Length: 305
Image (cartoon, rainbow, N blue to C red; front, side, top):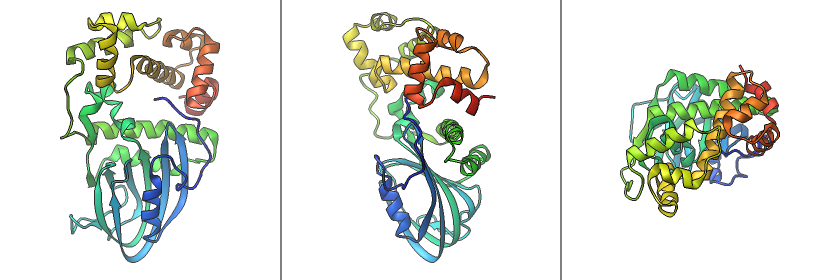
């Protein structure tokens, strides 16, 4: 993922993609914001507390996806269209950006929200599920259970977001949560149009070719040749099927491979740069810092095994 530098904790009303609607909804229903932070990559996280006799909460197409995990309480909270089903610690809700819902909230609740854009979710589809981004969206699920996701959500909530290393670890964990969520709660969009893109075989061939040649210089002409298309048609069809232009996709894959190598190996930076297709260690460090917000050595110290 292309990243923006992690920033200090901030009020969630100061946001670029509509979080003010969720914050206003919760605050108007007697919820207190304990903590909020941007994690980089336009991912945001918050921990909320609510204590109320009874209150109605209405979410109306916030535009961004939300994963909610109950940390404590919630035993008397129910979604109005699902009476008799209540929350509890470690129970999860997946709320897509276009969803509408009404809830009765009673008693004590302590919960974490992870906020993310639809493209954070769907751009993983090609590499992780061999599906096109335009095919998938987040399911609308209430009180589902997933032990791995719930455990990672607890890790997110326990991390120190004020600490730069803590923010980096939280960003890494958030991406892990989104990968698991894609597999468990990704559903086919009913309004998706799958015309105008690459064939499944061509998309797979391109993905494998790029993966196998990330350490080399890749040109538009070369990739168009792999797809047996003119450069003009290739660019348009690639973007339709991959969700990004060719150059942006290649850059994203190089960054992801670099993050993996820094996290899981002790390779010198020059070797990481070579395996990811950067000209040299200096060029790699510049690109990595530009995208992630910190130098590769800092990233490795914070999240490496």
